[in-house]
Amino acid sequence: MNILRKITMIAGLLAVAPMAWADVYKCLDDEGHVTYTNAKPSPKAKCTALSRDQRVSTVPGRSAPATPSPAGFPRVDGDTQKVRDNDRRRILEQELATEQRNLDQARKELSEQEAVRTGDERNYERVIARLQPYKDRVALHERNIEALKREIGNLK
Image 1 (cartoon, rainbow, N blue to C red):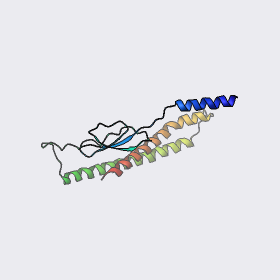
Image 2 (spheres, one colour):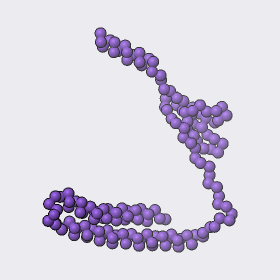
Image 3 (cartoon, rainbow, N blue to C red):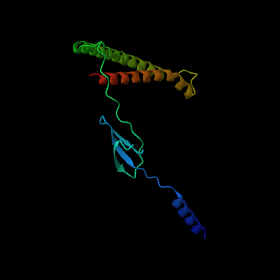
Image 4 (cartoon, helix red, strand yellow):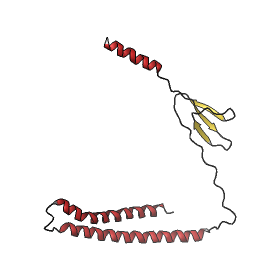
């Protein structure tokens, strides 16, 4: 009897539960931008129904085309820009070389400190606390090197 009551209750809940169906439309504006929406489109919009069984939120179309630069806006010729790009690459490579030297120095200092054992560090937690600034310095230089490599990789 208990099972019959549960089955009846589940069937009643399923009958009362609202079905969530939404039309999905593909709309095309005057500029040719496509927008997908489940909102009811206006009658003047150029929309076609795609699906009745998916829930889709409105996705805005692409933004308007970029406005051209004003006439008085300063421009740089191609040769000047190439010189600037080459200077930037040279500076980044110098920074990378400097960071690499700093990383090597930090690793050397860390290894020297790992070799040192003082008498008051019987607890290993004290050793870890003493070495942590050296490990942090190594990690900082490694992150800087990765960032510089990414930046150099992004150059044209």
